[in-house]
Image (cartoon, rainbow, N blue to C red; front, side, top):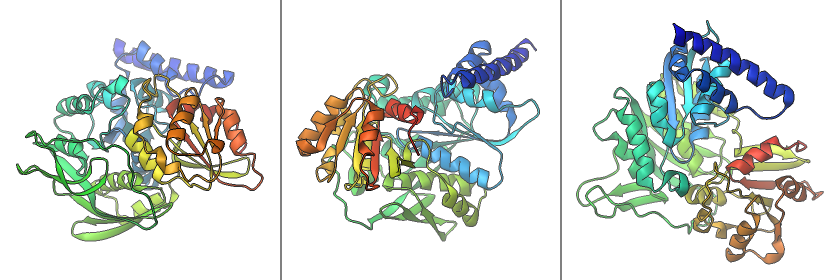
Length: 444
């Protein structure tokens, strides 16, 4: 009874704190309120789970968590389900608690919770909230100072899975590290059989991780789509699992067409997001939707109305200029984003090295910035590491006269938008640079 009282007190304090934040215009409040709720009631999230009447879906992995969870939530909401979701991507315990603290009501119940979780915090989340589904997108080398090597990140997720024996896994079959989570478990696999690019693009020269089979031999590939994603096998018999949701994809400049086989029927979906990496995100979300009984028309209706979230191929208009904002944070993710950059646009690359970005910026040298060498206009570097980024671009072969250093992110975007011709702008920020952009009073 005392703990339940603490829960209700924490809700009250959280709401009052949020009102204070909004009145003072001090913060977007994506984590502070959750931190207060957990301080007052350490079991806060355990009580929150009682407000979910149907299913809880968790999404984790190195890249694509925010987009995949956003797609899932939007598909469910469009199908008239009541969903609670950490939309803004605050995916540690405080961020997750924040969303519940601001949305839980004593007599209100949600049909679904869709929770994006940081890989390292997933096991802690499962201490308080059991999940019905876990969607794992991929595992790429990311923030070595926080996560260590990939085996460490995989270990975080495996520990979380082990805590939740009834968990239904939905796994990317094309990633050998992710597929391996399905060993001796209830797993559903999705993946691409064929990938076809419908426009010219340069194959990325970014370094690719070399993965060994559990037997110790290096994996071989029949098809390799990017990084370790593809159709892998080993002489010992280890290979990519058969997909429950196999798909073909055609990648266009700013959308993709997926043909997904389900129940021996081919279903075609148009996804208005750029790049193969987003096609993977959409395939994961569609698989989850099919598993929960939604049909093709319901899913496509949601895909048609989906708006990109907070820097994930987010489209805005700044000072009259069509602008696309794409988060970059590790070598594989950045290299895939760089494939999609409009080389006729003014480009801003804003790199910080705050804790949430990762202090180690060596990933800049493993990312394929050479894909910008034919940029036709300004490439402006900004953020705390503006000079380091400019040096990287110099060695990528970009002409010095096209590189401009402006540490102030706001001024850098203003410079990119000074052109009177309404040219497009591309902004590629690291995580805290993206937060800064979101807070700036830019004219849309």
